[in-house]
Image (cartoon, rainbow, N blue to C red):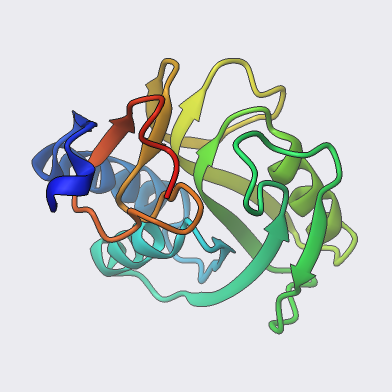
Length: 178
């Protein structure tokens, strides 16, 4: 971190992230033994978590990505969620695990799940590294439930900044401008 980032407070250190990823991978390995699921990462935030997760799994799998926009350059999610990039893998009759960085209000992931359900997968599960509050959607695999505060690092961003941080940090209000 450089001097501009002095208002970041560590929430989840890299060592804890590693343990959370291992625990989730073990749960998925157990549930998908003998199967070859398709992992659908929700861009952009989930790419770091998805990368660590699939390398830890050590099972046959496919990976694809979907991109949905609800935040953009805003501080809070919009009610209008738009799929801006669709998957390219045919998931009809396949086991699919949607991978998110954080589920907060649940609006974005609900739109993604509805969109993918129309493609007729045999099963559709949700895996989220972080969960906040009561998102109103079933989360099958969860890394950690967190409280309030805007979080960055480990793929999570604030206006496209801070994704590269190895830990997860809470960003202090007032340090959210450029």
